[in-house]
Image (cartoon, rainbow, N blue to C red; front, top):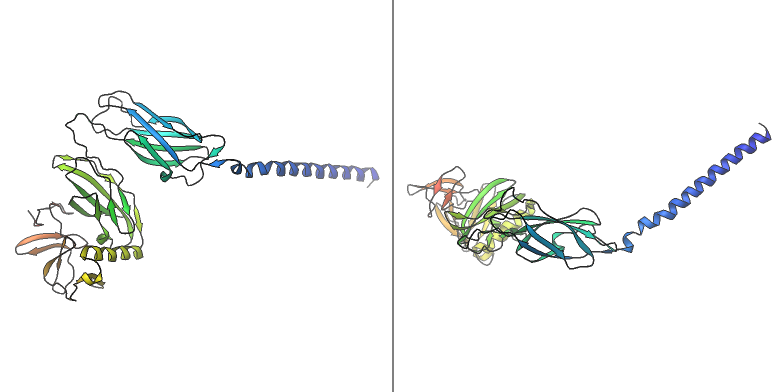
Length: 340
C-alpha cells in the first residue's frame, strides 16, 4: 500500500473518532436535563375542588362549574359524561369528568389517589381519580341524585366500604331510609341476603369462611314500594389465613367479649359452637350474636333446608337462618324464617 493511501485511511479514521466523540458529548450534555426534570418541579400533594351545579329535573342542559383554589394546577376541562339526549329526570345522577393540568413548576407524581382529592360546595361524591401523565389528572365526580319534588324520598347510599380489619361493611346514612338491605358475594357468587339492617354498618366476619374476593351491595329502603338503588362496594381480596382470622375475631364479637363466652370450632366434619360451660348444642336451635343456627345430633352446624316441628327453614352456607327474604332457590320465608 502506498503512503498516500495509508494517510487517507488514517484521516478517515480520525474523522470517525472525532464525530463519535462529538455525538457522545452532545448526548451526555443533553441527558442530565431529562434526568433532573422532576427535581426542578414540586410534586402536588393534595387538591381541593369546589363544585357548583345548577341542574334540575326537566332541564335540557347542564350548568356546572368546578374550580380549584391552588396555584399548583388548574381546571382544563369539565364534561358531563351522562347528559341526557332529552331532559334530566328524577333520580338522575349527573357525572362530571374533570381534567386538571399541572402548572409548569409542579407535577402529579405516580400513585396520586382519591385520598389526595377533596370536594367542597354542592353535594357530590368523588368517584375516581386517574393520573394520565405527570402533567394531567382526570377526576370523576358524581353529583347528588336529582329530586323531582319535595314529596320524593332521598334513598341514595354512598361510600360503601370495608373495614378490612374486621370484615365489617360500612356506608353513609341515607336521609329517608327506614332500614337497609345487603347482599354479600364471594368471587361473584351470591352468599347471603341480610335485612332489615338498622345501622349504616353490618358485621359480615362470620361469612368469611374461605379465601376469595368479597364484595357487597347495599340499598336503602323506605317501604316495599320505595327502595333506593344498589350501591356496590370495592372488592376485598382475602387469603385463607386472613379469612380464618376474621372469622375467629367475628365469633368472639358476636358471642360476647372473648373466648370465655363461647367460640366456633372447625374440624373435618364441619363447625361446632362450644359454649362457655364447654357444652355443645345438639338437635336444637341456638341464637349466637343475633343470628339463629341449627345444630345436628353431633353438635355440627347445619346448612340448607331443614324441617323442624313440621315447618321448613333455610340456613345459608354459613348456617345462618334466613328470614323475611327469598332463598337462593327462589322460595319465600317469613319473619320467623319459616317457608310460606
